[in-house]
Length: 390
Ligand code: PLP
Image 1: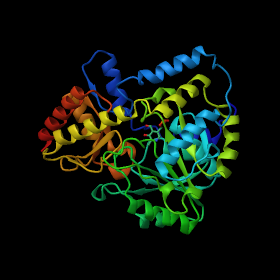
Image 2 (image 1 turned 30 degrees about the vertical axis):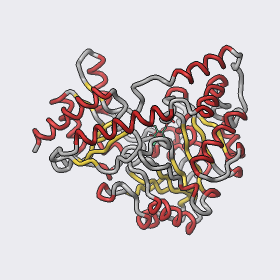
Image 3 (image 1 turned 180 degrees about the vertical axis):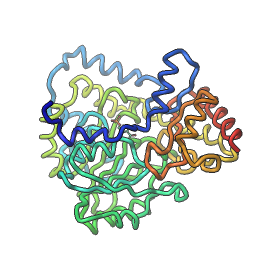
């Protein structure tokens, strides 16, 4: 057979995906078993009706064509306005690249700052696509583990110690998937200092920008002199309930966004026309954002309360995002073994912490993307299983 490129064959490296419990549970559920799943990060509700109606109008208005590679002007304007509101930094459409979801923005950012042989520092726990995204660029990375005991806030010293001659970027995610941690100003200042001292890019994945609990969203782009070296990964998936629509954007200096238009040219050739028009309305009118944010805030508080006095289980971080991370080391050092045991004894599937890196070994992640009654029942089953192991 002709050669398959090293970059592509490396992306899904290692047979294990970390999603084994999820897919096993899914198969059993599809075969008719009564299994609850709090694994995946996709909403249990549909996209707000106003956005669907806007898309319907755009479809019937003839928006069926190729679009500007960097995003239609109205969409870039709307995204720039949101980025400016979130960061307090003057943001023009030229600072915006519209992408296929936050993952598209992440891919573009990594392609922009990594050559084959480059190195990045990735703060863990991390979102599961990060390793493959660096491998797709021919780059490698070191993980810096934020400790549960520190509320999953990564330390600047450990990050700096991981920087090498080949390092071009640091990648962070706040609010964090899986831990729900929101990086503090102190944490971000420390990371920004490392970037300035070593002349590095900061890739800041902020796709959970609307899920910040009772705090205002804090982006490192807003810190002194950071706008010129920060690329912010953003998305409408989690804020507007639009996971399947695939709309995201990258915010950064024009000197990076300009050349990245070439990446859209050779990959996606721009976003979908009618989806772009619906996304403009969704951003301009903030359709669904307050309601969706409130749903997750309520679920987060309810689940925390349900688990509050559970001996053997401790929830840390989890101030934002749409997940909770529970420390179950008092009953098991192995989150994966715990997850399999829970599935067998209680018919409940959750994600082993190990899926998100070694810093969350002995933890499990609960996704809040389920109706209230399912989450209440999930809490009861977890509690029963923990009790049985004490
Ligand atoms: N970044 C993080 C931290 C995520 O959790 C996700 C999705 O779950 C993404 C990026 C990708 O999101 P999108 O649906 O916008 O591609």
